Image (cartoon, rainbow, N blue to C red; front, top):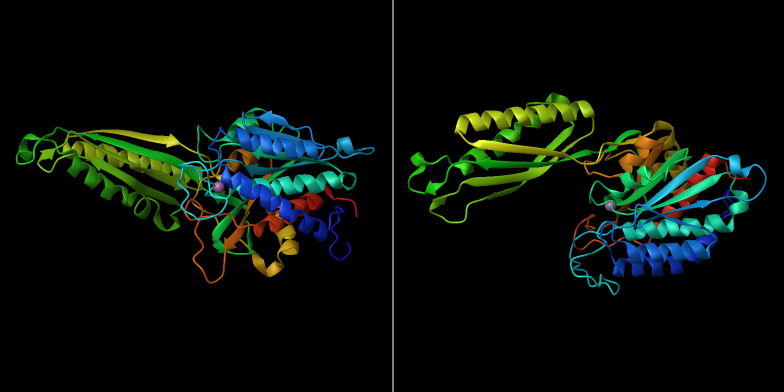
Length: 403
Ligand code: NI
């Protein structure tokens, strides 16, 4: 492997040369953000790029795309296949940044950096196509809609539509501002949390604020419930912990002298292990029954199932680590800060085939870089070449690109 030349034939200079065009694409995607399963313009933009570079992409999960690199030459059809994934959707957040390419859509913005992830995979597509004769296997590019929790996530739909049929391994990445810029984080096993939506309706009996003895006050019952739920993790799981229970919404009442009939609580439950999840669910159910009996109110509990735990397969996480040590340097690769209690529907991909999901640090030195989902967040374009090198490096590592 020569200086600046990787085994797959692509050079650092080639990646650099592509960057101005990729930055333009990233800013265009940022300016025209689309919510989950509505990514029509984004899909058209990616499709056009893929077709220009010789791919024959097919629609998947409505607004997603699947494209495959079929290398030329004898024996290549029988080669292994690795899949690389990018997410396409934006968030229902108002863009507050003064960027020249800020969102033109009120209440919609790329505040998780999926515009950057998509751009990275478009760059990878271009370079793979240029060097297809050096890639001894197949690479499938997955442009996935609806990562942000819409109707169970686009990944699940893509798997159901066969996007991973014939795939040996799958890889995905996410920018992550809490980790320092230029660092790569990956771990084997649990990487992101299983999620559940918690919703509890407390129904009592309302009345005059001066006559509590004639009422069944749902606010007092709900307040005790919030406090009791704090013990699910602290008293229910012991020193191992491994879960988060957060009540994030408490709504009740409309006047200062009226005890209302109802109170509503909503929140989120996160864990990294099915057994822990089961224990958390049991404790929440017990507490709900107990509070109902204690305060003479009716409690309706819903614990909707969100994304499953994202599990990285060991040999795939090792591959990411190996490639990361080459791309960013051995001292900048670690598992520090993992797993993350966020949810991610890439979990459905690694349930279907072996794979790994990893993080590119995006926190700039000397500043409090806004995190994903913050209104001031913007994807850092300096991560585009790092992401491209990681994905191309994984193609080399897993398919053994010609040297
Ligand atoms: Ni995201």
